[in-house]
Length: 397
Image 1 (cartoon, rainbow, N blue to C red):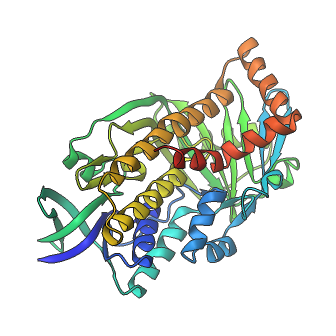
Image 2 (cartoon, rainbow, N blue to C red; image 1 turned 60 degrees about the horizontal axis):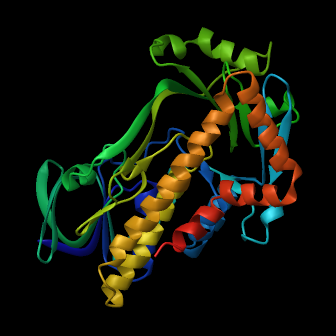
Image 3 (cartoon, rainbow, N blue to C red; image 1 turned 180 degrees about the vertical axis):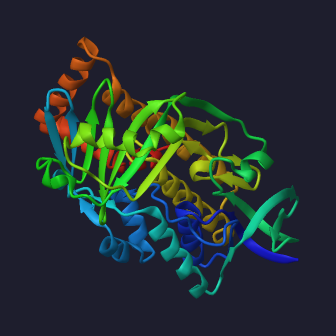
């Protein structure tokens, strides 16, 4: 039977960085990915400063920065009034070596890291390999994987579920996934059209509030990504039709014909697993929590999960650390997910969509107050850059 110290199910950005981190610390790791290659569709594309710092520790920051775009400034805008405020991470350059959001599609990082894994002596990257079962015994976990139509068993001391929203590991652990699904769809569209030539006062990252149709405008290399809401009962084909997409763009840059290179509809959830740890099995990333994309916290918090966990597993495996460290992992990462990631992403969405009247104006006034006060602005930037949440998690005993 094949043996390893840590088995990771899932080789997206979270699983890949976990595997590289563990292997670089001398821990034997196998990373299994059910697909044969990475999907190149546009999913998460924002890397926050503290995440870039983590990537830098495994040699991945420099090539990702070279491939991506630095976005030191992001903008909150009221679509109706045209009022906007920019927030510049240069103001928190004393708190991070990378005072910017790095805009780069996630599959570039995952591919780069999994290409690097085979060069590490104690790492094994297995594509086309699906975790189908696992059981814990007194010595560790025996996992069953399927590859090329054949089952194989792997004995591991610890199993990490980085296998996404429909996590097999979470199902094996029998952990509830508490939360809710938004009563709307999200429509994601990408175009190579230079929108910035028409909207000359926007930044690379723009959150635009509107009670009727809020939107997000994000720049990634060579493309603009646009995200808008749609009614849950709207027909998908109609939403993605040329007519519907043209209408969306006409509300952004009126009278300008725009071609798209990507169109997709998806549902959005706010959910947190009731536990991130059960025995020798742990959950990270989307397997552990889901949130709306407003703020770019999802992938980043997943990377923070697995980074935290990798350090604790190294302590257990190499420094005779107490297994109680895994309980602390749960307290730290689940705690900060609930207190910040969930709360802040919900607040960000509420700011963008809230109806007209005093409540909407109150939110605009709050943003004005933050922008006008250096102390409030710094606190806000540290939160949105996820620097504060990482520091807060470290304080949890």
